[in-house]
Length: 191
Image 1 (cartoon, one colour):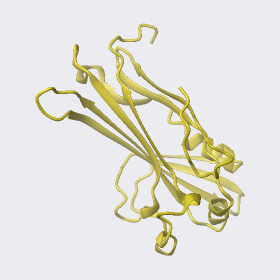
Image 2 (spheres, helix red, strand yellow; image 1 turned 120 degrees about the vertical axis):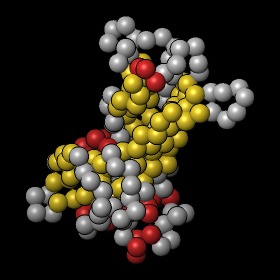
Image 3 (tube, one colour; image 1 turned 180 degrees about the vertical axis):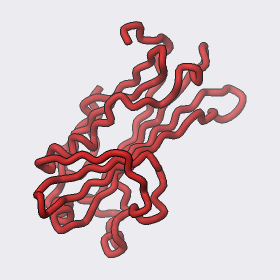
């Protein structure tokens, strides 16, 4: 399934969703996704000058109800911090499952760090939350329709204050993606 979207690129690059699928197993529900991300020269220049960027993956799983609005079962959030390390000339991606961010990013507790040799490798890592566990199998009710809403964005509110001014409508800094998926009825027997 390919869907065009505008992520950190001008109109000529037009990155695409390379993979977006839900996998239902006997253990639970997993998200497999892969986005193609590239950086505009403005964003790359800010990164090289030491400004970290914060990307947010947010997944909402809900169950349809005919008599009321859908019931939200779980909201899963991952915050990824991308920073350039000038002394080692490497790109560092840090993962936080905290979901907060009220502390300007500094208060986030990072669970994992990964270093990359190039910006392209770091962006590929950010756009690929492989086999992300969303729900346990017991939380999925048989015979009901479940929906998953996947959102990905660059969180401009976690940038330093001087950068936040005027970036709201700048296409070089615009990163937003939203897709809705339906949970498969059958459990994948291969897993």
